[in-house]
Image (tube, rainbow, N blue to C red; front, side, top):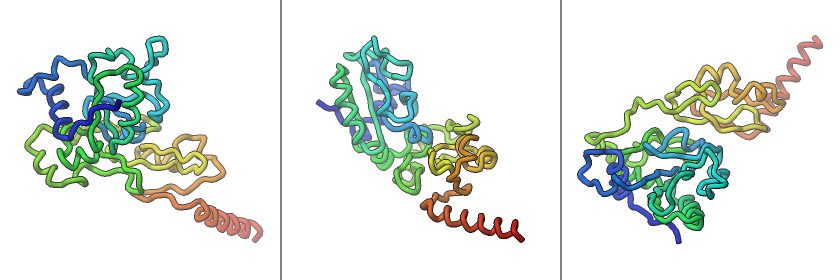
Length: 254
């Protein structure tokens, strides 16, 4: 049996009820409550619901979430949750992954499972950015979209409602840990690494677009990309490198 899907409006009510002590509806305030993000780490890095929790792993499928006490790990948000009385609200980008993980949690004894119907993208279209901080990761060349891209009129409606501060610079550089404002990933310049990560301008310059010092000496190194550019196929860079090496060799001979 899968989790109970909540429409965006009901999801919003739940979040507001547990975060606003003066909210008129107090039916959820005394309920044990965990807001669980079931996306990957790079998705979480640029945006998530306020108050959400996520296992400290690169990929959500790697976590041991919901295991029994003898198998608990520090990265499991459900480690101390009461399986019979805790409400678990799960969300992902489009709603599919929630269905998968809710089935697993149900098999492990969790009773009160809820998912965001249609995922975050559907929520932003209907409710705007209320209780959401940052951008939403998308699986195409754009990589990241602000909430306003989903429904501009919803943003206008939300202006009079308490939103998460736009100055909440929660995202951090993967390399140095400094706070960053540009919520957009880049791939490591080392083709054989290709890690997707957030990076500040200084570290991009210092490590020539790589995610670590080891990658800067890799044999298949691509040029540093600036702005919103995306890497092309390797053969394009390989051919350019071969031409550069030939030119250098000719200069050495002369």
